[in-house]
Length: 198
Length: 63
Image (cartoon, rainbow over all chains, first blue to last red; front, side):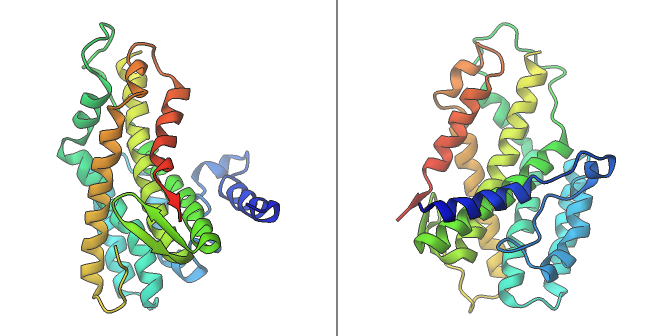
């Protein structure tokens, strides 16, 4: 990769994590606005929902927010491509809470514990829903940036399950989805590790 | 997965949700694989978690 491209990518990532050390930054949004993730019109639609999503304390509320966001996107004046890329985010915010509601925590707990550690405790294990959704959204942003970067510079990008996609927008969407999933999943796993083993 | 402009949005949404569900299965499945197993015996180990994340992202290849 060229140095210039690396520099551009680094700048984008810096923007993503540019929250300031002030009380108000606690509730500030991850930086999704600005090319190449979402444009201003898209953020106008999505911002209130993302803000609410980062305040949720249970998966049912998160799923309801995703349903509202999906309706808002479908009824908006955004063009087809703008809707599609935002729907990628709303779909993730629907599927992950669904997974948690449908015994997903136990599935992950089973994966990280094989019965060999005597210090493992079942009661008291917990996850922080707000952290899970925040990690998912930040993962989405990072994955979308990485995917878009790869799609724009390399043309065609191969992903697990999906196969190949072409260009910044498609690769960004798929990359964002992958980032969303890994962000949420590892947040759940680390939450369980911290509470089950300590 | 093709993002086809001729499909209607409902189909696109369903396709995305299927992708997310399949992706979740993949990521959760990876949690049970090496090198994650020794995390169970050595408390939280950030390094091994990072390795596991990298394994997932290593599957994303640029053609």
